Image 1 (tube, rainbow, N blue to C red):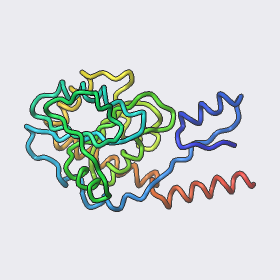
Image 2 (image 1 turned 135 degrees about the horizontal axis):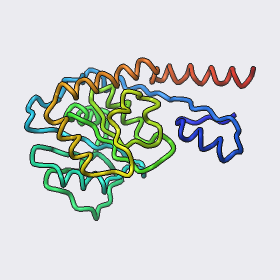
Image 3 (image 1 turned 60 degrees about the vertical axis):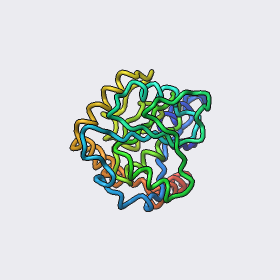
Image 4 (image 1 turned 90 degrees about the vertical axis):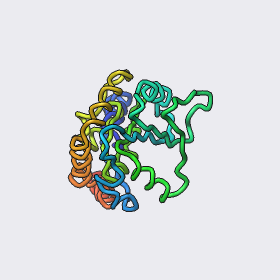
Amino acid sequence: MNSTESPVNAALISEITGGQKAVSLLYGLDASDLKGVGPEGGSSTDTKRLKVLGIGNDRHRDWGFFLRVAEGLSAEFDVRIATRSLDQNLALPANCAVVQARSGEELAELYSWADIVCLPLRANFHASGVTVAMEAAAAGKPVLATRTGGIDAYFPSLSGHMLSAPNSEIDWIERLGKYRLSQEERLRVARALQNDVEANELTLDGYARRLLALSQEIRA
């Protein structure tokens, strides 16, 4: 039996191994340092501006695409990208800044600042971006993501807030525009993500229980 952390990857493994069983084991993390930010924490009450955070370092972040989105946004948006993987040759729009989170405290400050967290993703099989989605949920922030990799297996409520690949700058710009005008919608999505964390036990303890159950199944 093979195990992986994404149902998309599990299906791929089963296919390339000639039908061998592969299970998707949702992992979890301890994001207690980010709790207390809360859905309202740091969120703008001024519908004229929206604070947009893109975050992550893996190779499946599509920062070139995200910069094109930022360029298409109006002056009512402040965009920050927290990453070490951005191509230094890419030009930054005037409303965009690249920042670093060198500690847990700085990471919490970034999430506190943001009104919404964005995951612009390249096609992948391993739920790229799910750690950030868990962190955002813990911090009480809504997420907008590319539909790829199986993140929605962890966060079923995110399904309606994912934009299908190939990425469309216009779709993202329009969706962010809607979020800018509705703090109520942002709070609703943030709370739905927190409910997913609880329902799917996306914690270290929950992950340990799933690992134990799988081990017992293999030994049986």
